[in-house]
Image (cartoon, rainbow, N blue to C red; front, side, top):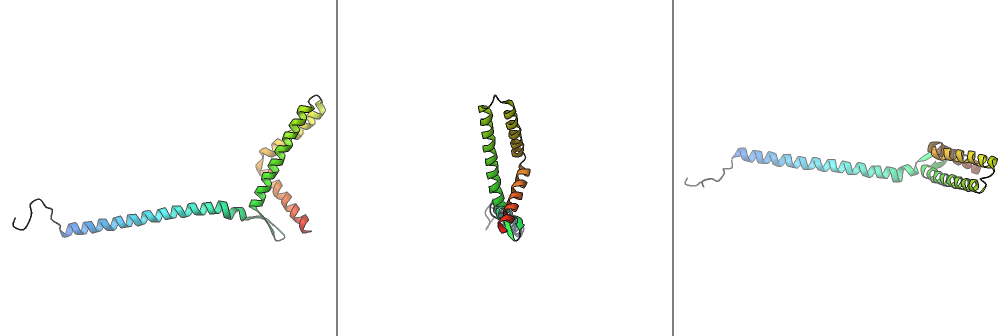
Length: 142
């Protein structure tokens, strides 16, 4: 025990090699985790950009070189739904006012049923809105 302290661990080449391997493993683990995090953040950012910027500006239809964008179709779809809901409310008010006349209220009820079925079938309403936009574009171009 001349130069050694009792109980102090000895550092050997084996210990140094193991420490170096562990350091390299930690570094690769950290790099891998950072790459995965960067990929996840990138995918989320791309998804948000796709939904908010790219898709609304994408052309749904092109009429003689004029594009009809998804954003414009969506805005017109919302307007069409709003108008149909207003018509349904007016018909209900007419039915409340003219409740005694059976033929008139049955006519109003059939109109109300048509409007409600159109409101419930969103894909057909969107298709109708797109068809109307194509027709309007053709008429405007003439």
